[in-house]
Image (cartoon, rainbow, N blue to C red; front, side):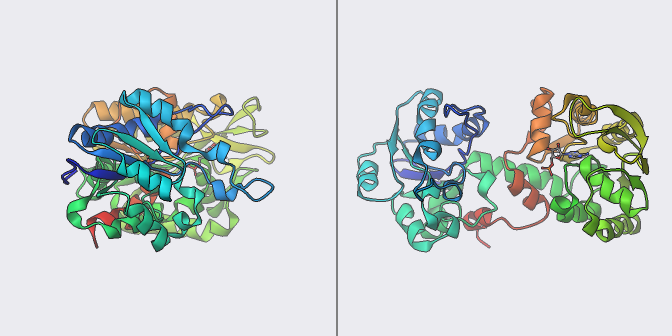
Length: 401
Ligand code: AMP
């Protein structure tokens, strides 16, 4: 963070979009904890914190009378826990706009913390409305963006607000810096071989990522539900496995592109198929190109695990985005678990490993290996877009074009 915060009221966009249970208790506070170094740095250097974040999608789930369900989406639920983590009182303003909030900000002293209500209670947030952004910008003397998870959205509090601060009064927070730095390690001049592991449900979600990876990785592993579209495209029988029939040509193109580029594309040779989509389904080891009718592939098989693990263990740089199967079902988690372990083992031998957000983060955590890889991203969609090579508006707004 390269700005002077002493004596300043610093408007910090954090990503406190944490999961809550029915009693509105936080079930995973990772996102709050990850923002603490930035918050502590500002407080320790004589700044005051004005925190803003979104929580859920309140305007997409209005009450029957058309009003916002404040009880469900208020950031007030988070203030006591943040207060515990910081060891400081956290004041709360029940709107990010208005007279009361301006008064609360003007009363704020160095070392104090004020949390603003959910930015998404206002239409202007997701629309990137300039008047709304200007009103929140006027609250702070400086702006810090530490919300990597929403950096791919040109929303008022993540992007537009930055235009009201000059370069000496705006900055990334430490989390944002770390996310960008670690992604850049993979994207720019990585140590080779670079092995990219992709998985998850749909090819269509990962199309741009796959194209980009085929361009610059040495090996691209494709597992999970995505793989069945590739088998179908090659004329295989895939039973009732998940498949995107309108993406068969694209799958064929990607395979041709990999061949032309000299990129090794690894698809699972064998699979564990199920007779229904359930953890208690009957299981059968099947050949990828020959899955019986009525059966669906829900995990990769032992031969594929062996091949993927060997590739991962030989890597110097690893990107992982997407599970190898329906890892939420313990009976179909073996492939994903083996990949998680192989990534951790390769890291121990000196490889750099980036877990690129979303379900692979859940999988690495489920295996208790999140501290044994080089970097676990907090931004699912944002990291995906960054790896795809897109310029994220939240990053551009701080760095300039
Ligand atoms: P994504 O968000 O695209 O990374 O997809 C993650 C989801 O894909 C997880 O919830 C997995 O359960 C699901 N998935 C992985 N493999 C399969 C498969 N073979 N069949 C159906 N769903 C799958």
